[in-house]
Image: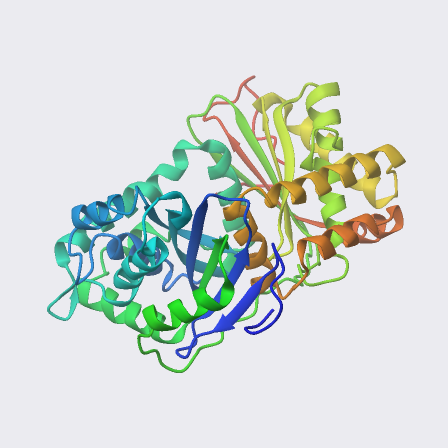
Length: 447
């Protein structure tokens, strides 16, 4: 809803500032805090991913007004322990710089003044007036954060489940932007300079989509006016980002094996769903994922983990902006063939319509509960509306719930018929457990 309309609790109120910054406010009395998320959007690609990932941590080190992390922390502590964090998000083929600001609401402090105004001023200082040394960011900050980013990238391998999913995505989408890791690549860090990184950031902040999402017991008109004053820095002509590639045809599944010093094998399957978040079939795809592996009652959990006792864990999840479904499981290496066979059988059964009423209704309840929980968490609420913005879907939570209630078994089967296996990735130990040779389907491993 745009500026000037009727305010409804929990609904999205929006405006665009004079410099093109988009503002989305969700007024609600549920929380004692005010939550602010700032998102700077960029197309995810190999050429810029690492430099983009470096920027938020460099910005957080200091601004012109607050040139050190210590000064920023002290300023936040003076706002009753306000918290400011930064990170990188990956949504489809977008890479987002995100700053999160949490403040207690003014009415709980017992004194006058605007904590929101002061908190937003700190955020604006960091984003719009970063600390500059010569013609670039402060070199000491850049070098230190490059080392920290390198540790973050290397650290992925310590979480073998996440590592296996990431590697499957990289193999599956090797020629697509989605195959790029959200924190970039180690080999790109050496070429990043303070001057080049600052010039790149100035281009981003001046032209790329920049948004503020705010959740709290606030009056939209007052907040919009406040933001018009605080975020009044100059920006250039807006830049549209590239659309995501979702409708990707699969010829034959690829089979990839990687060997590391692991005790437990990680079997990951990547599927193309042929369904985008904005498609009418998306709601049926949510049901498909829920029935297949999204809940404890799902086919994967029941048949791979519980009945066959082949997996320590087995679940599926959707990347809604890319139209990809991933199945993850932790198995004994010797159980690879059996586990893969049972997983494939569940996918085939769903395409044949072997879905019972209990599975449909358990999934419906599960999805409704997931959506209702969003209303109790400001970050999840923001994430819901951010997904809608990126995916071109403007449903309110109530409208989304109504569409969940309308999904039928026939809808799910129609979606199931479009699901195509693209890549099978198996992370296993260095040694064969029983002296046998390579048992991976699909020929020689290429990883």
